[in-house]
Length: 342
Image (cartoon, rainbow, N blue to C red; front, side):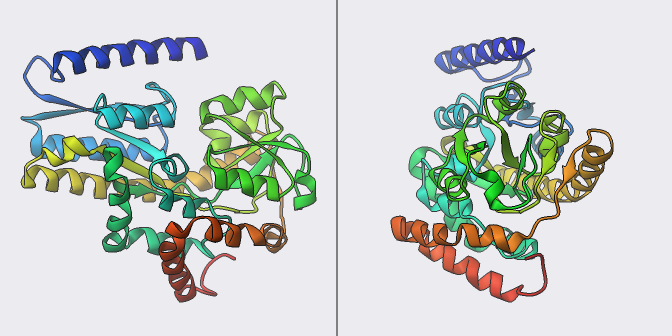
Protein backbone atom coordinates (compact mmCIF):
# COMPACT_ATOMS: atom_id res chain seq x y z
CA UNK A 1 0.00 0.00 0.00
CA UNK A 2 2.86 2.32 0.88
CA UNK A 3 4.50 1.70 -2.51
CA UNK A 4 1.18 2.27 -4.31
CA UNK A 5 0.78 5.64 -2.57
CA UNK A 6 4.30 6.64 -3.54
CA UNK A 7 3.62 5.65 -7.17
CA UNK A 8 0.37 7.63 -7.23
CA UNK A 9 2.17 10.61 -5.70
CA UNK A 10 4.94 10.41 -8.31
CA UNK A 11 2.49 10.20 -11.21
CA UNK A 12 0.46 13.15 -9.88
CA UNK A 13 3.59 15.26 -9.40
CA UNK A 14 4.81 14.42 -12.92
CA UNK A 15 1.39 15.32 -14.29
CA UNK A 16 1.40 18.67 -12.50
CA UNK A 17 4.98 19.38 -13.59
CA UNK A 18 3.88 18.81 -17.18
CA UNK A 19 0.98 21.18 -16.79
CA UNK A 20 3.27 23.86 -15.35
CA UNK A 21 5.53 23.57 -18.39
CA UNK A 22 2.64 23.83 -20.81
CA UNK A 23 0.87 26.51 -18.79
CA UNK A 24 -2.24 24.34 -18.59
CA UNK A 25 -4.13 23.95 -15.34
CA UNK A 26 -7.73 23.67 -16.45
CA UNK A 27 -10.34 21.03 -17.19
CA UNK A 28 -12.13 20.55 -20.51
CA UNK A 29 -14.76 23.16 -19.71
CA UNK A 30 -12.10 25.82 -19.25
CA UNK A 31 -12.34 26.07 -15.49
CA UNK A 32 -9.14 26.72 -13.54
CA UNK A 33 -8.29 23.73 -11.34
CA UNK A 34 -7.48 24.59 -7.71
CA UNK A 35 -5.38 21.85 -6.07
CA UNK A 36 -5.18 21.45 -2.29
CA UNK A 37 -2.91 18.90 -0.59
CA UNK A 38 -3.01 17.74 3.02
CA UNK A 39 -1.58 14.93 5.13
CA UNK A 40 -4.72 13.58 6.80
CA UNK A 41 -7.45 11.06 5.97
CA UNK A 42 -10.79 11.80 4.33
CA UNK A 43 -12.55 11.63 7.72
CA UNK A 44 -10.20 14.03 9.49
CA UNK A 45 -11.61 17.43 10.60
CA UNK A 46 -9.19 19.23 8.27
CA UNK A 47 -10.46 17.33 5.24
CA UNK A 48 -14.05 18.09 6.23
CA UNK A 49 -13.14 21.74 6.59
CA UNK A 50 -11.55 21.72 3.14
CA UNK A 51 -14.73 20.20 1.69
CA UNK A 52 -16.51 23.31 2.99
CA UNK A 53 -13.80 25.43 1.34
CA UNK A 54 -14.43 23.62 -1.95
CA UNK A 55 -18.19 23.96 -1.61
CA UNK A 56 -18.09 27.70 -0.95
CA UNK A 57 -15.62 28.49 -3.75
CA UNK A 58 -17.57 26.45 -6.29
CA UNK A 59 -20.92 27.89 -5.17
CA UNK A 60 -19.66 31.42 -5.73
CA UNK A 61 -17.05 31.00 -8.47
CA UNK A 62 -18.03 27.67 -9.99
CA UNK A 63 -18.04 29.09 -13.49
CA UNK A 64 -14.29 29.78 -13.15
CA UNK A 65 -12.84 27.30 -10.65
CA UNK A 66 -12.95 23.61 -9.75
CA UNK A 67 -11.38 22.63 -6.42
CA UNK A 68 -9.60 19.27 -6.11
CA UNK A 69 -8.46 17.96 -2.71
CA UNK A 70 -5.57 15.48 -2.32
CA UNK A 71 -5.52 13.88 1.19
CA UNK A 72 -3.25 11.22 2.76
CA UNK A 73 0.08 12.72 1.60
CA UNK A 74 -0.84 11.80 -1.99
CA UNK A 75 1.35 14.66 -3.18
CA UNK A 76 4.10 13.92 -0.66
CA UNK A 77 4.83 14.92 2.92
CA UNK A 78 4.34 18.40 4.31
CA UNK A 79 7.69 19.80 3.16
CA UNK A 80 7.19 18.49 -0.36
CA UNK A 81 3.67 19.92 -0.50
CA UNK A 82 4.96 23.31 0.66
CA UNK A 83 7.55 23.27 -2.12
CA UNK A 84 4.84 22.45 -4.66
CA UNK A 85 2.78 25.35 -3.33
CA UNK A 86 5.76 27.68 -3.58
CA UNK A 87 6.27 26.84 -7.24
CA UNK A 88 2.57 26.98 -8.08
CA UNK A 89 2.37 23.29 -9.01
CA UNK A 90 -0.47 23.22 -6.48
CA UNK A 91 -2.34 26.18 -5.06
CA UNK A 92 -2.86 25.33 -1.38
CA UNK A 93 -1.62 22.93 1.23
CA UNK A 94 -2.08 22.33 4.94
CA UNK A 95 1.09 22.29 7.02
CA UNK A 96 2.00 22.53 10.68
CA UNK A 97 3.79 25.61 11.94
CA UNK A 98 6.86 23.45 12.55
CA UNK A 99 7.13 23.04 8.78
CA UNK A 100 6.94 26.81 8.30
CA UNK A 101 9.86 27.61 10.61
CA UNK A 102 12.30 27.15 7.72
CA UNK A 103 10.63 29.99 5.83
CA UNK A 104 9.84 32.41 8.67
CA UNK A 105 11.35 31.80 12.08
CA UNK A 106 8.52 33.60 13.88
CA UNK A 107 6.61 30.32 13.57
CA UNK A 108 9.12 28.68 15.90
CA UNK A 109 7.22 30.15 18.86
CA UNK A 110 4.42 27.60 18.38
CA UNK A 111 6.87 24.74 18.99
CA UNK A 112 7.65 26.16 22.44
CA UNK A 113 6.54 23.69 25.12
CA UNK A 114 3.66 24.91 27.28
CA UNK A 115 3.40 28.18 25.34
CA UNK A 116 -0.35 28.38 25.98
CA UNK A 117 -1.71 27.90 29.48
CA UNK A 118 -5.16 26.82 28.31
CA UNK A 119 -7.07 25.82 25.21
CA UNK A 120 -9.15 28.97 25.61
CA UNK A 121 -6.04 31.15 25.36
CA UNK A 122 -4.82 29.14 22.38
CA UNK A 123 -8.09 29.59 20.50
CA UNK A 124 -8.36 33.28 21.41
CA UNK A 125 -4.87 33.93 20.06
CA UNK A 126 -5.51 32.16 16.78
CA UNK A 127 -8.94 33.76 16.30
CA UNK A 128 -7.43 37.25 16.61
CA UNK A 129 -7.39 37.62 12.83
CA UNK A 130 -6.13 41.21 12.81
CA UNK A 131 -3.02 40.28 14.79
CA UNK A 132 -2.39 36.94 13.09
CA UNK A 133 -2.62 38.43 9.59
CA UNK A 134 0.65 40.24 10.31
CA UNK A 135 2.22 36.90 11.18
CA UNK A 136 0.76 35.27 8.08
CA UNK A 137 2.50 37.80 5.81
CA UNK A 138 5.91 36.73 7.12
CA UNK A 139 6.27 34.05 4.43
CA UNK A 140 5.52 36.35 1.48
CA UNK A 141 9.17 36.30 0.39
CA UNK A 142 8.98 32.51 0.26
CA UNK A 143 6.09 32.72 -2.21
CA UNK A 144 3.14 31.70 -0.04
CA UNK A 145 0.85 33.11 2.64
CA UNK A 146 -1.30 31.59 5.38
CA UNK A 147 -5.04 32.06 4.89
CA UNK A 148 -6.33 30.46 8.06
CA UNK A 149 -5.53 28.06 10.91
CA UNK A 150 -6.87 24.67 11.96
CA UNK A 151 -7.00 23.27 15.47
CA UNK A 152 -4.60 20.36 15.83
CA UNK A 153 -5.33 19.92 19.52
CA UNK A 154 -2.88 19.28 22.32
CA UNK A 155 0.18 17.17 21.64
CA UNK A 156 1.21 14.49 24.13
CA UNK A 157 3.62 11.57 24.16
CA UNK A 158 2.56 8.03 23.28
CA UNK A 159 4.76 4.97 23.17
CA UNK A 160 5.12 1.21 23.47
CA UNK A 161 5.97 1.69 27.17
CA UNK A 162 4.14 3.59 29.95
CA UNK A 163 5.06 7.26 30.40
CA UNK A 164 4.00 8.48 33.84
CA UNK A 165 6.73 11.08 34.35
CA UNK A 166 9.56 12.68 32.36
CA UNK A 167 12.03 10.11 33.68
CA UNK A 168 10.13 7.44 31.74
CA UNK A 169 11.12 9.17 28.49
CA UNK A 170 14.83 8.78 29.16
CA UNK A 171 16.46 6.97 26.25
CA UNK A 172 13.23 6.44 24.33
CA UNK A 173 13.40 7.21 20.61
CA UNK A 174 10.48 9.57 20.05
CA UNK A 175 9.36 10.92 16.69
CA UNK A 176 8.98 14.68 16.70
CA UNK A 177 8.14 17.21 14.02
CA UNK A 178 11.03 18.37 11.87
CA UNK A 179 11.61 21.48 13.98
CA UNK A 180 14.72 22.45 15.98
CA UNK A 181 12.48 23.59 18.84
CA UNK A 182 10.61 20.28 18.96
CA UNK A 183 13.90 18.39 18.90
CA UNK A 184 15.25 20.51 21.75
CA UNK A 185 12.06 19.92 23.73
CA UNK A 186 12.18 16.13 23.36
CA UNK A 187 15.84 16.05 24.27
CA UNK A 188 15.15 18.23 27.33
CA UNK A 189 12.67 15.60 28.48
CA UNK A 190 15.49 13.04 28.21
CA UNK A 191 14.17 11.37 25.08
CA UNK A 192 16.14 10.78 21.90
CA UNK A 193 14.40 13.02 19.37
CA UNK A 194 13.81 11.32 16.00
CA UNK A 195 12.40 13.75 13.42
CA UNK A 196 10.70 12.07 10.47
CA UNK A 197 7.72 12.42 8.14
CA UNK A 198 4.35 11.83 9.81
CA UNK A 199 3.49 9.15 7.25
CA UNK A 200 6.45 7.03 8.37
CA UNK A 201 5.53 6.91 12.07
CA UNK A 202 3.29 3.81 12.11
CA UNK A 203 5.82 1.57 10.41
CA UNK A 204 8.71 3.00 12.43
CA UNK A 205 6.98 2.16 15.73
CA UNK A 206 5.85 -1.24 14.43
CA UNK A 207 9.39 -2.17 13.41
CA UNK A 208 11.00 -0.81 16.57
CA UNK A 209 12.88 1.96 14.77
CA UNK A 210 11.33 4.37 17.30
CA UNK A 211 9.60 3.75 20.63
CA UNK A 212 6.83 6.27 20.18
CA UNK A 213 5.80 9.73 19.02
CA UNK A 214 3.94 12.82 20.20
CA UNK A 215 0.70 14.04 18.76
CA UNK A 216 -3.00 14.47 19.46
CA UNK A 217 -5.55 11.74 20.12
CA UNK A 218 -6.69 11.51 16.49
CA UNK A 219 -3.29 10.14 15.49
CA UNK A 220 -4.14 7.03 17.52
CA UNK A 221 -7.25 6.29 15.49
CA UNK A 222 -7.18 8.09 12.14
CA UNK A 223 -3.58 7.06 11.56
CA UNK A 224 -3.88 3.82 13.56
CA UNK A 225 -0.91 4.60 15.80
CA UNK A 226 -2.91 3.11 18.68
CA UNK A 227 -2.38 -0.30 17.09
CA UNK A 228 1.36 -0.13 17.76
CA UNK A 229 1.67 2.34 20.69
CA UNK A 230 -0.48 1.37 23.67
CA UNK A 231 0.30 4.14 26.18
CA UNK A 232 -0.79 7.78 25.85
CA UNK A 233 0.66 10.17 28.44
CA UNK A 234 -1.71 13.14 28.11
CA UNK A 235 0.95 15.60 29.26
CA UNK A 236 -0.17 18.27 26.70
CA UNK A 237 3.26 19.75 26.05
CA UNK A 238 2.30 21.70 22.90
CA UNK A 239 -0.71 23.23 21.18
CA UNK A 240 0.47 23.65 17.59
CA UNK A 241 -1.97 24.80 14.90
CA UNK A 242 -1.97 23.62 11.32
CA UNK A 243 -2.07 26.30 8.64
CA UNK A 244 -3.75 26.52 5.24
CA UNK A 245 -1.19 28.19 2.97
CA UNK A 246 -1.76 29.48 -0.54
CA UNK A 247 0.55 30.28 -3.45
CA UNK A 248 1.10 34.03 -3.26
CA UNK A 249 1.21 34.57 -7.02
CA UNK A 250 -2.18 32.89 -7.35
CA UNK A 251 -3.67 34.92 -4.49
CA UNK A 252 -2.29 38.19 -5.86
CA UNK A 253 -3.71 37.34 -9.30
CA UNK A 254 -7.28 37.16 -7.98
CA UNK A 255 -9.65 40.07 -8.36
CA UNK A 256 -10.71 41.71 -5.06
CA UNK A 257 -14.09 39.97 -5.34
CA UNK A 258 -12.49 36.57 -5.97
CA UNK A 259 -10.01 37.01 -3.12
CA UNK A 260 -12.89 37.83 -0.80
CA UNK A 261 -14.55 34.53 -1.76
CA UNK A 262 -11.39 32.52 -1.10
CA UNK A 263 -10.82 34.26 2.23
CA UNK A 264 -14.40 33.59 3.31
CA UNK A 265 -14.05 29.96 2.17
CA UNK A 266 -10.97 29.69 4.37
CA UNK A 267 -12.79 31.18 7.36
CA UNK A 268 -15.72 28.79 6.91
CA UNK A 269 -13.35 25.83 6.59
CA UNK A 270 -11.89 26.70 10.00
CA UNK A 271 -15.37 27.00 11.47
CA UNK A 272 -16.24 23.47 10.30
CA UNK A 273 -12.86 22.07 11.34
CA UNK A 274 -13.17 23.43 14.88
CA UNK A 275 -16.62 21.89 15.35
CA UNK A 276 -15.53 18.54 13.95
CA UNK A 277 -12.34 18.54 16.01
CA UNK A 278 -14.06 18.63 19.40
CA UNK A 279 -16.43 15.82 18.42
CA UNK A 280 -13.76 13.61 16.90
CA UNK A 281 -11.30 13.92 19.80
CA UNK A 282 -13.94 12.55 22.18
CA UNK A 283 -14.75 9.73 19.76
CA UNK A 284 -11.07 8.93 19.15
CA UNK A 285 -10.35 8.71 22.86
CA UNK A 286 -13.15 6.21 23.39
CA UNK A 287 -12.18 4.14 20.36
CA UNK A 288 -8.52 4.10 21.39
CA UNK A 289 -9.45 2.98 24.91
CA UNK A 290 -12.17 0.48 24.16
CA UNK A 291 -11.31 -0.93 20.74
CA UNK A 292 -7.53 -0.52 20.48
CA UNK A 293 -6.54 -1.15 24.09
CA UNK A 294 -4.67 2.13 24.57
CA UNK A 295 -4.07 3.12 28.18
CA UNK A 296 -4.40 6.85 28.86
CA UNK A 297 -2.00 7.78 31.66
CA UNK A 298 -3.16 10.20 34.36
CA UNK A 299 0.01 12.29 34.66
CA UNK A 300 1.03 15.36 36.65
CA UNK A 301 1.35 17.97 33.91
CA UNK A 302 3.28 20.35 36.18
CA UNK A 303 6.12 17.84 36.50
CA UNK A 304 6.44 17.78 32.72
CA UNK A 305 6.36 21.59 32.60
CA UNK A 306 9.16 21.80 35.13
CA UNK A 307 11.31 19.42 33.11
CA UNK A 308 11.42 21.83 30.15
CA UNK A 309 11.33 25.13 32.06
CA UNK A 310 14.60 26.29 30.48
CA UNK A 311 13.54 25.60 26.89
CA UNK A 312 11.29 28.67 26.62
CA UNK A 313 14.04 31.08 27.72
CA UNK A 314 16.62 29.39 25.51
CA UNK A 315 14.33 29.83 22.52
CA UNK A 316 13.71 33.50 23.31
CA UNK A 317 17.43 34.12 23.68
CA UNK A 318 18.30 32.42 20.40
CA UNK A 319 15.45 33.82 18.26
CA UNK A 320 14.54 37.50 18.87
CA UNK A 321 11.93 37.33 16.07
CA UNK A 322 9.53 35.42 18.31
CA UNK A 323 9.62 37.92 21.19
CA UNK A 324 6.65 40.12 20.17
CA UNK A 325 4.34 37.19 19.44
CA UNK A 326 5.46 35.45 22.63
CA UNK A 327 4.60 38.55 24.71
CA UNK A 328 1.26 38.87 22.93
CA UNK A 329 0.44 35.25 23.82
CA UNK A 330 1.42 35.83 27.45
CA UNK A 331 -1.07 38.70 27.59
CA UNK A 332 -3.78 36.41 26.24
CA UNK A 333 -2.77 33.70 28.71
CA UNK A 334 -3.21 36.18 31.56
CA UNK A 335 -6.75 36.97 30.41
CA UNK A 336 -7.70 33.30 30.67
CA UNK A 337 -5.71 32.42 33.79
CA UNK A 338 -7.65 30.02 35.96
CA UNK A 339 -10.34 29.50 33.31
CA UNK A 340 -8.82 26.60 31.37
CA UNK A 341 -6.60 23.59 31.64
CA UNK A 342 -3.21 24.00 33.25
